[in-house]
Length: 93
Image (cartoon, rainbow, N blue to C red; front, side, top):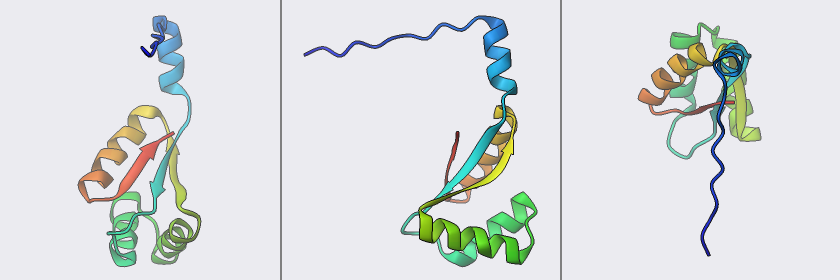
């Protein structure tokens, strides 16, 4: 049975508004990154203090995910790429 795909066409104004909306960078739990590595990345790239980074690491471990940063889509994409290069599982929502 064929699947229908609907294409979303945005006007330039709608696209600009969607790019300016606040987005969240979400860090997801995985089975291969250590607490120390997650803490290190949060401190190095997102400028969290060690206690803040530890809280994030434990929240991700216990709840499966944690929003670690908010900002424009463009800004979140930059951080997503950096953290993915470090091996972390992150998405922009």
